[in-house]
Length: 159
Image (cartoon, rainbow, N blue to C red):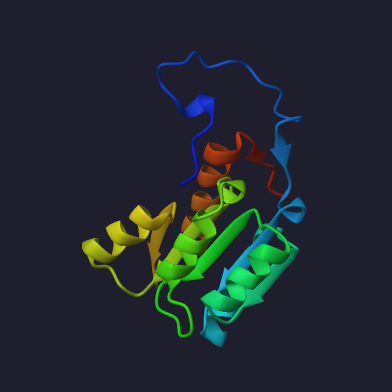
């Protein structure tokens, strides 16, 4: 699972850092959407486009998602929980199986709100779990918080 940056460890002193040099814009980040539902692809892609992301790839299941990750490591993955071919949990576990992928932010989306399902996803490497239907503002806040926490950089959102 991803490790937080030193700014998020309370025992360490917080140091001043240059906001400009430690930030990225959404169009610099690659996002992978892994979901077997075409409508969900469109909803998530629409939200991401609204936030300023331009490098968005879509995979219809976990196997296709894993192939996409092996071609080019994304910065952020938004994955469904329940998919054919390769279940979302198997996908997350496979992604997290390579230390080179530790800085990827993984957000799992699902209609399941069972605590055991959520904890299982986190145990296998999902950074957070978001229940469908989701609010765009909540998705944006999660992306911002997790990206900063695991990559020690802020996202400079377009105005």
